[in-house]
Image (cartoon, rainbow, N blue to C red; front, side):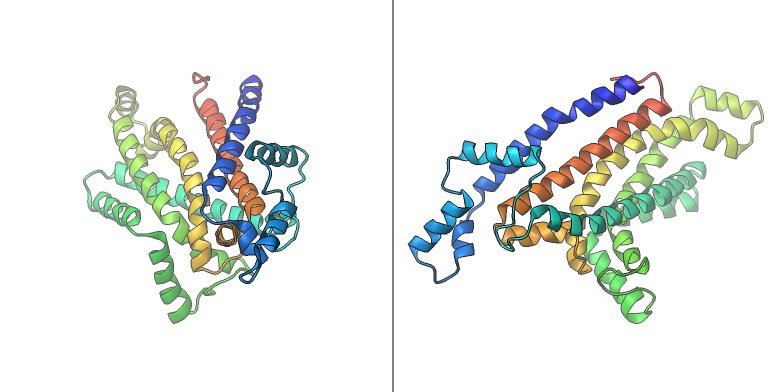
Length: 305
């Protein structure tokens, strides 16, 4: 197991290099000149040229990339073009809100999605099954920002149970986390039901039932473990979706997280902040996939990569 984890961690090095190249090149293709934006509306050509030289934007692309890579290796992430503050400080201030929101949404999606899928599979073709599948279909169809606005209207404005925006206490996280989790929850519910129905029809499950084992023991102990393997894969992929979806949800609920920082930085052509923010999000997605692979190996020791 330890060798497997070490190999997977070492595979991060080429992955990070690839991500750094992609992020750097994509930003070079964006329209607009950050030097023009920073110099201001009434700046002369000389002013723009002076800003471009001070930012290093007049150097060849490969020189700029190597400089970017050197800053990443030395953890000197540079200074924001727009605010002139250290990028590390800006990321450190915004990232905790985003990762907390994504983890809460993932927890809600896993717990309630798995439970809904188990209920639907255990009571197949019953009213509970139909209700759970209709609910999951609605969850997949509803846009997260629209659901967020509905939750704000009913639970914050009309009932006053939760704050409408911002962060300050645990109650502030409830509505954004629920809004963000609904799509993944619905997907996990459908995946759990499909796999559990298939698993419960296998011979070893019929043998367990023939021995007189309680229904709950057959489902939880013998069925769920095998049916849960594909669900773990979906959960790992969903974490990337949740981090990406936080960009919209943070805007709806006025949360100063990393998602909003990315949006503001793109509008300002603030290259250093955009590059590092996207890399931080990508590294977290890669870590989530590493955890998924380890969970796979724990649940089924026959699997090795």
